[in-house]
Structures are given as structure tokens and as C-alpha cells.
Image (cartoon, rainbow over all chains, first blue to last red; front, side, top):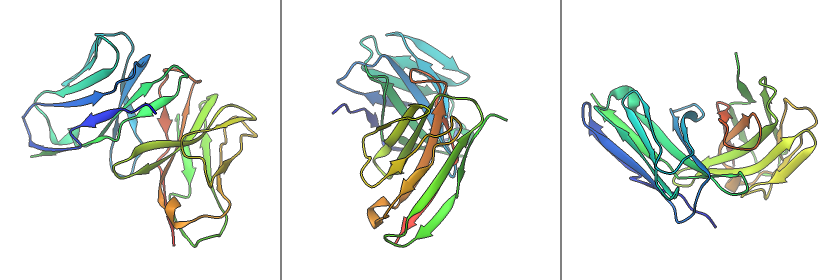
Length: 110
Length: 113
């Protein structure tokens, strides 16, 4: 069974701090997606990374796909209360099915 | 507006009483799926459909049924709900199977007593 482990599971920090969320697996993925979910809503796609070593930036969010395509990270610079939410990573396996991490619950305190 | 709709949003029912959660998308997507979300377990896929009349089991299909008679609709059926099916359910759609964006509905919170 393929697993995608996210860490930390929970993170509460002050506005303005930096943070990194990790997504790790022993399996190779053809692509990896990051989603953000707010209370009472479904997840919304932030980014898709496809190439090993790929880095994508979305304003203050930086996403990196590991060279071996087994892991990924999400770095947020100068976090703001609007960044609060559940962050989910999902890797696509060789059968084009998504393997989901359990999520990182992020709270940014003003 | 491109969207996935689910109904109902909230449902409290009793063990054994058949229920259906509807899902509809207006984006002409081929691929649709159902997930359940439980604390600490993330999203687990129940069933998916790659196109009309094509459905397949996901990771946790026991106790659920689906159908895909039309491209836009993908209802989830619980023939005899049990308390362990209490969960938050999401329907999702994407252009087709592959590295495409999943569009999620707003979720259905189901409680089975």
C-alpha cells in the first residue's frame, strides 16, 4: 500500500513567521498536487508539480518536488491569517490514481 | 460558474435507512469520484468513474454503491447505512483521469445513529 506522510500534522504560528510543510513517500509519483481546504468547503488546488526538482511559486508559497519524485515541500514566507487552513498533498501513482496525505492543519495567529 | 454541487449538505439518519447523496458537475468532466474524509485519515476514495457507465472501486467501497448514467451526475448510495459510515463526504470531478485539477463539491456531513 502506497503511503504519503505529511508533517507536521498540526502547526500554529504567529503572523509573519515562515513555515515548511513536508510530504514524504517511499514511492515514486508521476506528479504531485497541493490543495488547501477551508472549514465547510472542499479542497482547492494550489499547484501541480510534475518534474523532479521542480520549484513553483505562488505569491508567498513555494512548492518543491523532490529530485526523485518521492517527496515534496510547501514553504510559506511571512504567513498571514488568510493562510489558515488544511493543506493536503496528493501524489499520482502509475495507475493515475491519487494517493492522499492526511493533511497539515495550519493556524496563523494575528 | 464552473462548479460541483452536492446535496444534501447535512444529513442525520438512522442505521439501515437507505439514502442517496447527489453530485452534479457542469464542466463536462469525464472523471468523477467520491471521497470520505475522517480526522487523521485524510481523503479516502470510495468509488470513481472514468466516464458514463464506467465505475470502479476505490480504497474503501464496502457499504456504498454508485451509478453514472449521465456524464454530469454521480450519485452515492448507501443501501443500509451503519454508524461507521458517519463521515464527511466529498464528490470531485476532473477533465479526465490524469494529472488534472480535481474540483470538489462543498461536502456532505453524514451522521448515522
